[in-house]
Structures are given as structure tokens and as C-alpha cells.
Length: 258
Image (cartoon, rainbow, N blue to C red; front, side):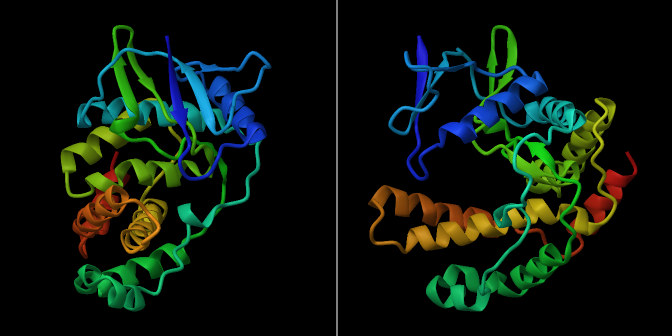
């Protein structure tokens, strides 16, 4: 039995997929084995195949395990693939007032979105290594042999601190979750370090760029109705997740103590 995955947006590139698989192998993190076609290719008409893994998707109880896997990958410090930074993960190029004219739901958050965009764009982008770039409980499967990490499609360059910030970004107001994530990461030898609000820049960049994408998708008449509806639901959720003033400072201080 196998799992088949179709790319709906950007078709996977065979060479890029082979780099992903090499990175995954170097890290040694348990995950479903990629399968090839009879001709030895990992991509066929936009589809990919993996060994089947029976399991359930956990909740936030998997955050400690994810932090340990992040540390494992970061210690490998894999640099054999392209290391050019990608703006989606480190820069925000959005005119928020103009976007609010198109989508009024964004309007109340515009001052804070502008402030956070300035923080993101002022943060340095350096010390890049290959990272998973999508570490979330939704990408974990708990099976009979324990947890495994799925969805390696987004692997690419980030710094260890940037990926740690992504893992933390949706839990900044939960002191217990921040402690659990950072403590597990530190115990596993993770090199990333957050000591100030700017340390969360990558997590914020992803959050803000994702919001921008969802607004555009919700207004795109070429998309199917269910895709536009999903995008609208994500707009509300993302705006609610935007950290209020003071949240970044408190979370950074807490992370720095561990």
C-alpha cells in the first residue's frame, strides 16, 4: 500500500525532489519513504508516491517532539542544496493599507501589520542551512512505531533560529508551550537562539505572507468556490493570530531564559 500526493499549485521538480530526499536521509528523521516509478523517477505528472504509514494526527502534545526533530536537522547543518533566501520566509512586500481597501477585514489590523512588517524587513538573513520549513503538528503522524514527520515538500534554506521562530510563532501567548518547545529544542542540542523580538522575524514573515496569499485567493474569481471560502476562513484566523504589542518581547525573554 502507498500514499499518492498531487501538487495542486507548483508541480514538483525532479532535481529539487532529489535534493529534498538527500536532505531527509542526512537528517535521519523518521518519515515515510519516498517511492519511485518503474523508471526510477520520484515525480510523475505532478504526482509523488510514498510508503503508507498508518497513524493519527496529534495536537499540540507533539510540539516537544517537533522541537527535538528541528534540533536534529539543525545540527546536521546541511548546505548541499541552494542557499539563496526566499522572500516568503524572510521578507514581506505588502502594501497593507491598499490590501485593506480590497479586503475590509484586514483594516483594523493594518497599524500592527505595518509595524511587524518593518520588524521583519529589518532582521538579518544569515547562517542559512537547509530546514524542513513546515514543522507543525498537522505534519506529524503517530503510528504503532511512534511519530513520523511528513510533508518535506517545503524544505530549503533558513537559519536554525528562523525555523525555531516558526515553530513558536503560533504559541507566543502560551507560556507553557514556549517553555516546552524551547526546552526540548535545547535538550536535543539545537543551536538556534531567540533573545529578542527580532528573533521571531521568520515566523512573522511566514504568517504575514500567508495572510497576503489568502486575501488574494479569496478575491480570485478563477479559483473554485471552495478554495475561496477556505481562504476567507484563513483570513479571520490569521488576523486573530497576529501578536499584539508586548507579546514578542515577553516570549523572547522567556525563550532566552531556557
